[in-house]
Length: 187
Image (cartoon, rainbow, N blue to C red; front, side):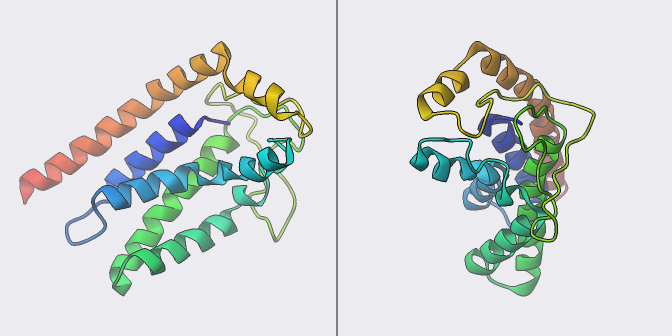
């Protein structure tokens, strides 16, 4: 599982790639894309309130159906015009799904192993046998207490994992930026 840094940068790159003339663009759109890419991990908040941060992590928020619904709701609430809403919905869903894809190809050693991609249709969890990123270490069990969880989050292992995420995400950001500059140069 990646950090909010890695998820957010990938969401920003997706937003930048999704910007268009007369379409979604600007700081609000990019910030929304980043929020959608980080959003599934907000499932830590109820666990933090309960004193066990990992209690609800990798639950329903890590589902394609939740991503579809939230991105549709945001597109309908924040943007006007059917064609624009459709484009915004697609890009926001891509940002949300990027989180799921990164988690799918990350390490996971805490039960339940994997993410429930097809919740509520199925409680089955999925995890690729191929690991692409080192992942962030935060809890060995869902019952891990907040203090122990915080100690594991702020570790050198996680600093190294974030460095790897930057090595992966920065080229994506550069490609997105170059594509936008070329598009603007043609207009």
